[in-house]
Amino acid sequence: MLRDDINNAVKDAMKAKDERKLSTLRMVNSTIKNADIDARGQGKPPLSDADLLGLLQKMIKQRQESVELYDKGGRAELAAQEREEIAVISAYLPKQMSDDEVKAAISAIVAETGAAGIKDMGKVIGALKAKYAGQMDFGKASGLVKAALSA
Image (cartoon, rainbow, N blue to C red; front, side, top):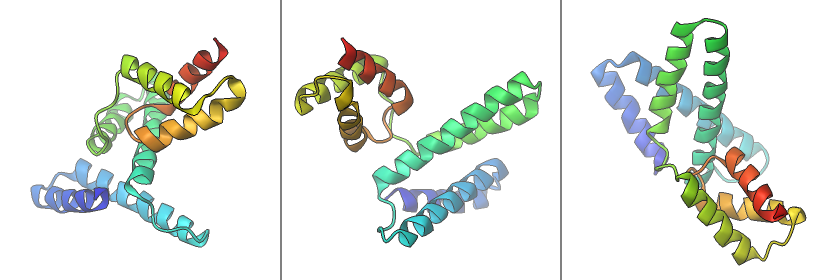
């Protein structure tokens, strides 16, 4: 399980005295625990690995946005710190799909679901998230799905 991998990595980072990795992994654990508490409050079970992958992608996206802002503001040291955090978090995501693989997956899901137009976009995105969680950037995929359903 992904949780176990992260907890073991926390222990390894402590032993190696790798402060950046340790603080990043502790932050990841904290985010996971908060999401679990939130889910429990809504009567849902703890997050599955697929849900955790989505959470990790969201954390990476937040850091990428911060990097852009820090670069614009001339804060290179803070941008470098965010990039290091992205590298640590990315290690727990499966290999990302190439653009061609994403387009092929979208074509397959469109055919599978029988999606005909923009009104079916939610159905296609939902199927993609269920099948390819953590393997693609759904922000980019959304635009590709829209293009595919508009054609």
